[in-house]
Amino acid sequence: MNILNTYKSIFGAAIALALAAFTFVSCDEDLVYPEQSKLPPATYNTSEWDIAAYSTQEDQDGEGPSPYGRAIAILDGNTDTFWHSCWNGCTPTVPHFISVDMKTEKEVAGFYLVQRQSLTRNIESLELLTSNDGSSWTSQGVYTLEKIKSQQVLELNETQTFRYYKMEIKSVFDGTNHAALAELVPYISYN
Ligand SMILES: [Ca+2]
Image (cartoon, rainbow, N blue to C red):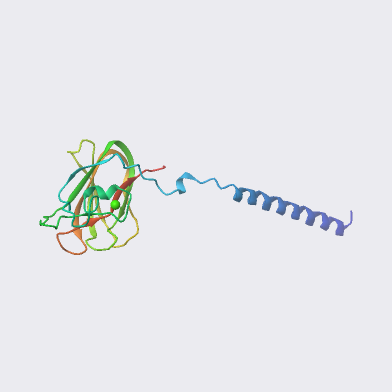
C-alpha cells in the first residue's frame, strides 16, 4: 500500500467513525427519556383537603360567591380564585393565618405560592409552619415574596413529612391590615 492509499484508508476510517458517532448521538436524541430530577416538582391532589383554621376570610361575598374570598381558594388549583381578609361589614385584625389539613402525613419538599392576580393586597413576607397534630407547630422559616403574577417556589431546608401546614402573614405590600392569596400548595420531591 502506497502512502496515498494509506491516507485514503485512514481518512475513510475517520469518516466512518464520525458517521457512527453521529448516528449514535442522533438515536439518543430521538429517545427522550425524561430524567426525574429535571421534571418540575409535582403537587398533590388537594381535592380532599380541608382548611383546618383561619383568622379571617371574606365570606360575605364581597369578592364573589365561594370559593372567592374564602380560605379554601388557596388550594383549589385556580390562580383566579383567592382568599381575602374580611372587609364586607367587618374589620380584620393582624396577624392573619390559614392552616390546611392534608388528611394524611405527606412528604413535602416545598411550596408553590401564587399571589392574587390583580397584584393588590399581595403578601410581602410570611412564616411557614408544619404540624402532625394540628396544634403543635414547627416553624420552617420566614419567606420573602415577590409582587408578581407568576408562581413562586418556597423551598424547605429539607424534605419533611407532616399532615398540616400553616402560613402566618408578617407583612403586606400595600401596608394595610388586608391581605389576599391565590394559591399555596406543597410539592413533592423526586430526590
Ligand atoms: Ca385559588
